[in-house]
Image (cartoon, rainbow, N blue to C red; front, top):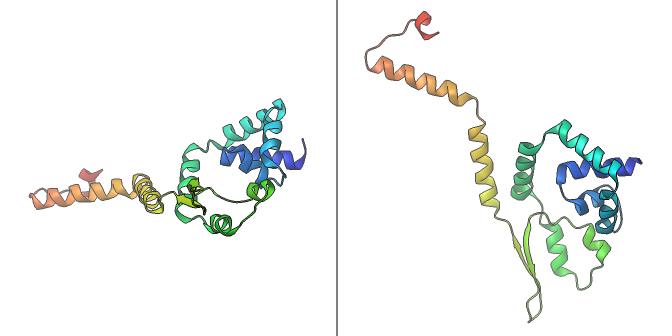
Length: 159
């Protein structure tokens, strides 16, 4: 397996998008190349090995939300202002945060993006769920309640 093929496997295990992984690994005509790579058993084994090693499902969600919340829209803007664009140029555009592209009958180009605000809210929600200090805050609140109600805890009774 070549270094570029190993890169493809690594990017595929992170992005879960064959075209994007092939483009990131430096392949031209990434869509067709990614299909050919995924047909190979050694490539599929390497991807599976990387996925099992990383167990990245939760981190993939976080990574995707971060890309939606903070990702650049520069490539989408390039697409709007280009009259002609080749398939190879399209392959290299980062359109991860684009949810929809339309070309109305009257001309022009309409691009809709994923909602950054929702991605940020979801990241905040996840970070609050992952906050380990929540348990200690809860215990502190219980202690204060007990003191307010007249109960006094010694250090031995807390443990």
